[in-house]
Image 1 (cartoon, rainbow, N blue to C red):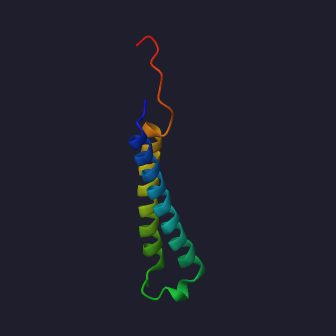
Image 2 (image 1 turned 180 degrees about the horizontal axis):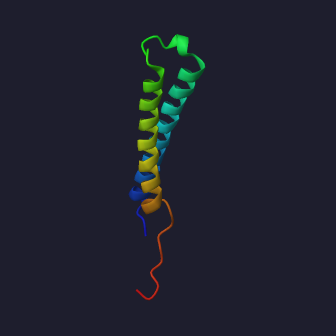
Image 3 (image 1 turned 45 degrees about the vertical axis):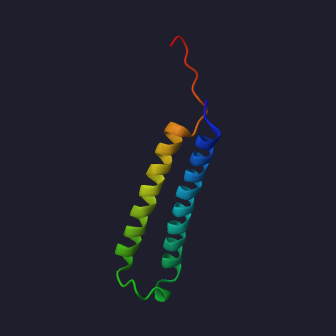
Length: 79
């Protein structure tokens, strides 16, 4: 059975990871829709690729967190 603090930590970690995913997706959308306004990034493809890499990293972490800590406690049968 999960403790209250374990539940809070997992919930906080999920929020943190999803928040970062949302942040980088927003950056990509802004970059795609307004390339003129992003003057400090002259290589648009490279910039978007870097942002996508960060999104993939956070999504991988979120998937692992959900896999091992996202569900209900597993019941052991004949164990």
